[in-house]
Structures are given as structure tokens and as C-alpha cells.
Length: 64
Image (cartoon, rainbow, N blue to C red; front, side):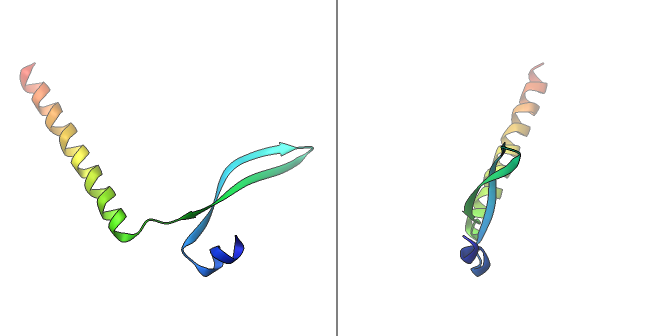
């Protein structure tokens, strides 16, 4: 795990923290970051959702 993190592109993510016999234990996972096109797609989906919610609110206000 340490090798992949130091090489780059991966991050250690803590999944669980628990205590056993007075010691803290952490369950870890390796995660790979999003690529640039994934980020753009996520931003576009978020913006589309926001615009749809705004349109629904405006429509509901007009009918009231």
C-alpha cells in the first residue's frame, strides 16, 4: 500500500476506526482519484440537477 501511495495516483482512505483491547485499529482502503473528464462530468450533472430544481421551484411558485 505504501508503495502505491508514494508512487502517486492513490490515496489511503480510513473506512472504520474501532478499539480492541485498549488499542485503536483502523481499516484502510486504497482509492484512486477521479480523472479530469470524470470531474467535468460530475460538475455538469450537479449543475443540471441544480437547474432542474430551480425550474421546479419557479413552476410551483407560479401555480400557487
